[in-house]
Image (cartoon, rainbow, N blue to C red; front, side, top):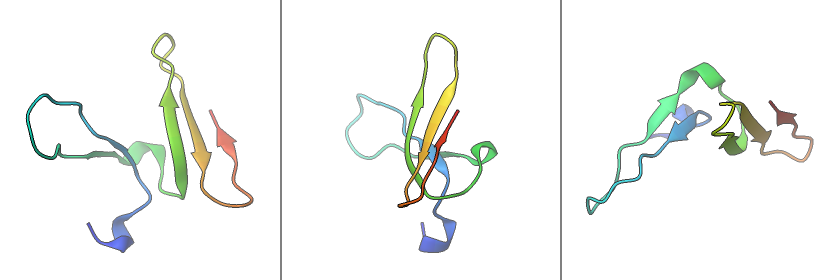
Length: 59
């Protein structure tokens, strides 16, 4: 993946198979400098942080 395509949130499936798993982009969550993503399993609410000195916390 080239640098131009960076900025998406990715799900990387856990697998018991050896080797690398294929990352799946979630383009619906927008494209910006993501730092971290967490999903509350009880509510499905997504929390995102932005990877910048003036970054924000998104819900």
